[in-house]
Structures are given as structure tokens and as C-alpha cells.
Length: 405
Image (cartoon, rainbow, N blue to C red; front, side, top):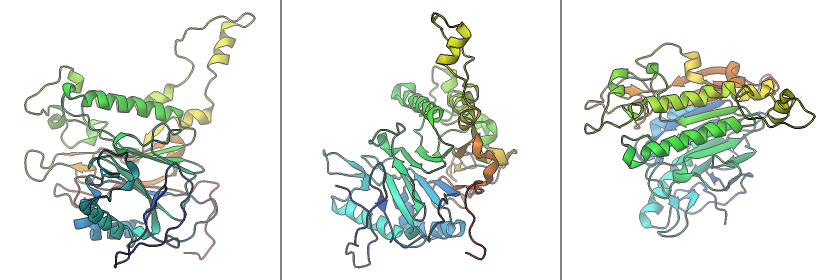
């Protein structure tokens, strides 16, 4: 049975339900049908925000007023959230879980759900519809807030977009619009030790991400906590992170050594996702079996036709922040910061991204980190700061009438 989240009045009585837009799974809805204004026909989101909240529930309990003011000022069309620790999927112990809905079968979970619904029923969040992908336990999870005036054609929760299932731990939400695909991911941490299977889990994730970006049929906007710092410029102290160890342990493979997110293996695989797509042509050496009456060159063309230029462009990916910010910024150039007390004080990494298809590169207006300094200003209680992306209007996108607000 499809169920939707509705605003909860102060007396706690349930609000009237309203139909949801067509999507791969039932979205959780916050706010009333009238919020967010009306969009022009054909208008699509252009302002995006991503944030690893490090427990959205805790942020709602302690840091929500400040974050709400920030969102009201920025006014993003879409907000992508990761790591909703302490917000498990609905379903009693031992029963199948519903990753699209918050758990509410115990007194404590019902109380937590009320906190969430009240937070999302207030401005500015009442103007958004919300889709959840939650873990079975209080771990990981993602959410996507989309202004109600924008209607995605489809929302799915698996890198295999034909599957109705959610990714393990709720790590993926995909919203498809007319002219682009928006992918929100929370990548698994690489971990420190091979024998804990975290290396293998991350390798498998990176392989699936590569396959996904190779198969997209529209321009892609990929955001979230990608749990990797691609280059030395993306960390505050490269030598510190390269030589980091946990309890003196050194992995057998040198490429797996160092801080999770900054190992050579992870950085190489991430670079492969971004750049290998640039050489997806028929120049690879592959066996060709003769077909009577056809030359070898003709057979090659029949089996592996060259990508059209627009298809090739779709598969080229650009790091939006680094595209605009070429130099290292020790104050505002990182999205994750270590604890202000201890050896990680002042140690920072850029692991939260907006990655876009090259076709969208010239439309990038801004891509900014909204936190700075070693005291975590602008992090709103998390160890990650929000990151935003703004695109210019597409050539065919209608402009608002003169004098409209």
C-alpha cells in the first residue's frame, strides 16, 4: 500500500492525503499542494544543493533553524541529502522493510518521525516534496527534496534504473527530468583493512558507478558524498592523508594505503569514471570474426559503430567545482573537516561533489562550498558542509514574463 508523509498539525492529528506524482516508488510528501509556486511549462531545476547531514534527525533537533535560514537564502530547486543516520526504514523486526518510509512501529520511532514531519512542514521545506531511500538500520540513507513546481518524470532508487528495489543501505536516488538525470549517491567508505571486506565493497561500487555513467542516455548531474578526494589539491594536507594508518596497520597493496578516500586505488578508479569515458570508441583491440562478403573494416563498423558526437559528450564528465576553482583554497575549498580536537584538527578533504556531463559544462554559473575554517563554520552541526550548483537556463527553456517575480 502506498503511503505518503503529510504535514503534522500541532495537535498531532493526521493531515489529509494527496496523490503523488508518478515515480518508481511512492515518495514521502511534506507540505501542502500549494507551496513552491507554479513553474512555467518546460521549466526544470537549475539550482541544486547537496549535504551529508551526518544524521538528518540530529540536525533537525539541534541545528535546523540555522540550516532553514541558509536554505531560504539560497533557495535551491533540489536538495540532496546523504547519511541519514538514526532514520531507519519502516518495518517491524524480522519483517520486510519499506525504504521509502520512516520507521514508526515503536514509541521511540514514532517520536522521531514526528520530529522529522514537523521540521519538513515548516518553511522553507514545506515547498518541497521529499523522496527517501532508507537503510534497514540506523545507518546511511539518502533523501531528495524537489520543489513542488518541478515534476520529475521518474524517480528510482537503484543504479539499475529498471529495478524497483532500493540500493543496499539506501545509497541512491535518481530523478529523471525531460533534459537531464539527477543522481544523488552516498558512496561507501573504503575503510582501512582488506580483511574487513570494505575494500572489496568499494571496488564493486566504483565498478557499478562506471557502468552507470557509461549507459546514461541524457546529460547527467551526479552529486553527493562520493567519499573520495580526486587530487592532492582536494585535501588540506596530502602527506598526512597519504601516510595515515589505523592502529599501525598497513594494507598489503601499496595503492590501498592511506586515509580512506585518498588512497591511490580510490583516486585512480574515480579518475577512470571521469576520464575513461573520453575514449569509448572502437579503437580498442577486439576480436573480429569474418563475415563472408564483408571486409574486416565493414564488420568492425557493423559490430561497434562510432559513438555520435552527442553520445560521446554525454559520457564525458566534469567536476563542476574544480572547473571553476583551479587553485587550492585552504579556507573554503573543502567539504569535510576533521574534529576540531585531536590529530585531525585542521585536516580537511573535498569529498562532496557535483559532477556534470560535459554537455552541461558551459551552463555552470557557480559551484560553491558553503562552510569554511577549521571551526566548521557553515557546517550546521555536521562534519560536512553543504555544496551548491547553479546552472544557466537551457537554450530552449522558456523565460519568465517581464515583471514576474
